[in-house]
Image 1 (cartoon, rainbow, N blue to C red):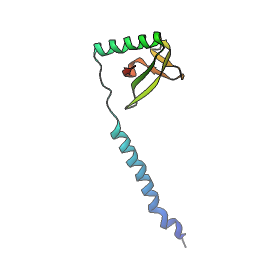
Image 2: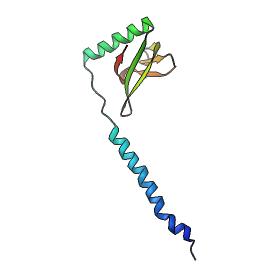
Image 3: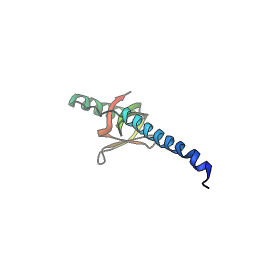
Image 4: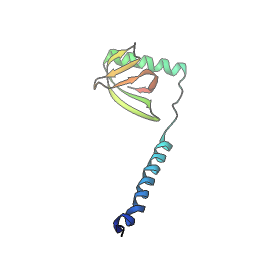
Length: 104
């Protein structure tokens, strides 16, 4: 005689699988397309990076990563031109091509 518990809980496993699928669909719907920046906007971002680096001021960097726009705050510790990235005082880094906006 088969175990009654296995038969009774079999549909419950399919609900869990569909819950994972629904969460993946919601996650993919939240993704945004990376905004394109004009030459003027890129120049403005570049100037703000240089100014914040020399003044050692706290900046807020908005950047694009894997379909989301994220935000980091900090002081620029180092600008790596060979890797094209900025290293902040918390040792996190942001690549130049990911940056969308900078606020002082």
